[in-house]
Amino acid sequence: MIWVVDASVAVRWFLKDEGHPNADAVLYTLIDRPESFAVPELFCFEVYAVLCRLHPSGHDVFIKGMIPILNSGVFRQPMTERLANQAARFVKKGLTGYDATYVALATEMKGRWLTFDEKAHKCLAREKVSHILTKHLPQNWL
Image (cartoon, rainbow, N blue to C red; front, side, top):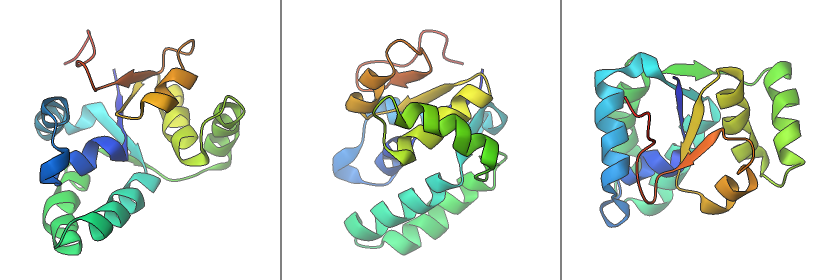
């Protein structure tokens, strides 16, 4: 199974007041098995923007903490016509273009989107392509 990590998960790795044990579990597993994870390139820009806005040393944290993670073997998907077309289907279900891109990637890779965004997760209830991390890790977690 490929796990597509949402920016809402990654920012919790670096923001003390936002920390969550399930986000930490994702990070530890990602470090051990980066080949089991994927992100759309959008992820990098979203995490950078949030860290620069909310962390007193956001740029430095991104460079020292996030770049090594991104270079560890996590699959990074650029936006393509195919991914955009897949994302359009999820935008019609009520997701933002950002969230739809994560879900489209998860769908393309026959994986699951890991997120803390409950509203987006609820939009996808029938799709079974996302997992909300607020309560627990997925049943079939690595």
